Length: 326
Image (cartoon, rainbow, N blue to C red; front, side, top):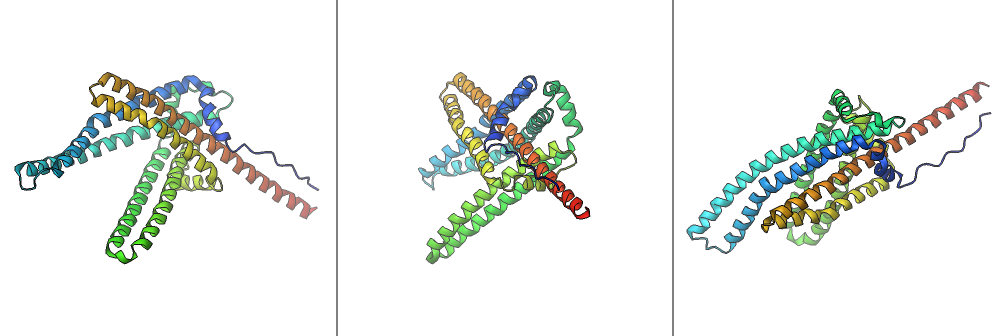
């Protein structure tokens, strides 16, 4: 008769955060190089946004404020309207170009970070053997799956956002048209928006998690990677909430540094503003590095748990078969 093995104690609730924090220490040389890339890309995007996009938005805001105090029949009013239209058109063009650049750069950096984290976590015996050059070569050879997954989840996130925006607009129209049911519609809107926000945050996590799957499991990409991510995260919503809360809180805590940098730059303290902007880029790069490493640790923790469950199920079936044939 087969004996039952005592199940081993699983990792603690916070273990994946600790593993994500300690993961770069396994290959300091690699992660220092990758960290430098993250800092450079973050600083580039922040500088581009502050120099190319934000001035146009500020100009539109100032013109809109001036428009409120201008006589509609005066020539200045028509001039301000024309300036707002021109600036808005330019903002849309520049914003679209900057958004495209941000998506390309952030996606490339994200994939490199994931390959570094996955390579280091999966190669526990000789993690320091992987250099940045070797990592880039490996990433280039396995780039198809993560890229397809990135494109797939980007499309899904855009579709979900558009649908939720449409639902919100529809509720707004109904509230205007059916004023006698305003209180009921307002309550329904709050509940729907709250539920939609929770869904969007969780879905965004799954999309990011699916890219980890695509990097860690070559051949699993697109919808298959998203499905695999959903199965691995199933039943671990509290840990997902913890991850989102921790990474979101870290980003929120650092946000005033960027605001202060922009304020200093606008008050003719350009040097101080640039310094604070660089400090913000360095700190945000750390947050991004930790977020990727923690998600990678969460993946391997869930994968090990899933493999153990499959092994236990297979062992139980084998034992039952042996007992039946005995």
